[in-house]
Length: 415
Image (cartoon, rainbow, N blue to C red; front, side, top):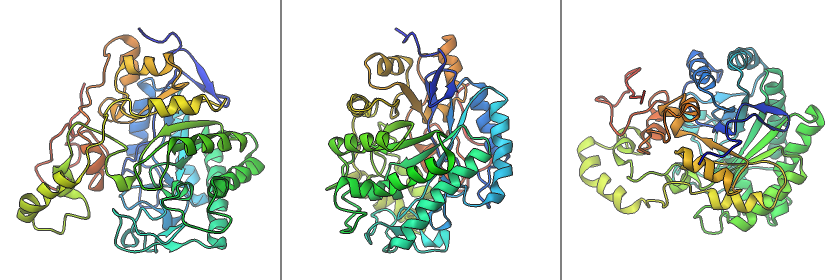
């Protein structure tokens, strides 16, 4: 049975939403070289807006060059010169009655100097198992101060560009998550040790934004748990949620996992070995016969298959929602109308966000609302999450392109 308020208007920190079903931040590999959104972003976001989404949270936008993603086409918000392009984007989305929120991020150690031209930085000089080409530089006081200032400056640009709010990316092993986790933060100064110390960079960012922008909506995305030794667990995530609320955060989106764990963030019934071998930077230099004969079997043996593959953050979201009074959003393997309604009915969340269902069907919310569909036709193959290393985001429906270089427009969509 459908939740009675699912398709009724709602609000987050004064942002009027058409319904309680949001598009979660998803990297699209579509930005211009400068980091500005291009025509492809406008086409995608207006389609999602027309398709009935309650709100759109953009793919992550970098606040510093050294925190730029190793994936191509990352949005950036590190310079004032980018504001006019974003203003065109927000205007296009608003013309369809949909609010849009800019996700702000710094990749920390989860990037490569081969891409950014700069040595990666992190709270502690610990090598990442995925981005393992170099040891990151441990941030000093000056570097941390610059990051705090640049997050706030990027939020100011977002406000001037017409975004309805920003979301701090504090999940999935990116820089702010690296500070929060005892696994990646081994510092013994005021930025490490206790949970309050590890959270300090976030509280300073929120304080700076509040001082400069008043009650401008600032959301946060967190990983409530992961499988790293000494990493994030739900009790600490509850503590972080309470600290976020006390620091003036507007809403919390609950996710899980880190990039280092593989596809624990976006789970599926099968391991996407074929696209990994075809385009991931760690494998493309290996001769194709060797990839197929040796590397593929090793990957299948060594890569864990996270379970469950649906609704896997619901319990964590419910625990966090019981601990705070600000809105809680849950994301992660929620692909059916029943699952959306259950998340709201059972008090797990105030709002639900989805990523992959919007990749295959930009109008999935309208289809849910009109009874055309009760479940996304996404098969959770996760090819979309991997093939963005070689081209713009699109659905591949579990099939590799004929050539390793992805031809424009070859993705498959469910209509």
